[in-house]
Image (cartoon, rainbow, N blue to C red; front, side, top):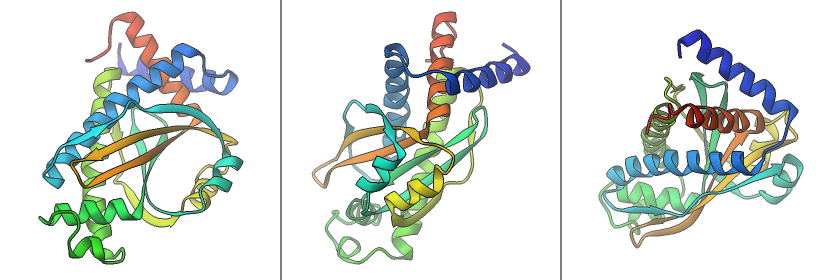
Length: 222
């Protein structure tokens, strides 16, 4: 399929997403996409922390924004990437502060419970997590592009610490719902936690529909 046809297919999928809900096949599709992209992201992270990482099968659900804002009053380390080629929208990954401190400690060559874990979140932690997010999100975008058989490129990840609910309220101003993907993560013996990724509803629906279209046409790149 040429670039013009691919662009038209993407636009059509996004327009369709606004007018209809997810069916079982689309839920399964976005779960499969998440499983592969997050698996690639965690493989990139495992190199940085010098250890193995296991993730559970992602749990996909439609979440109302109002409910999420009320539920997530905790501070989180939040990374947003915007898709600048191949897809239209953004994705957000939420990490707990303690998990970031462990990751930083491991990246610095300690055992996950050393001085960088014991410190409050600092510029060093933010620098370390920004580096890891750049690798992780880049790997995830590459995997997404391979699956959809198209070039997918992202912006430089933007990472900050703030209340998760306030971030959701600000980032999804024009949306009353989004797709929430949660997954359990085990990093060696150091971290057993749950991470959360969000996609705008229209983008997640478009990804699922494009995935199913490519699958039907036998054009999936994996």
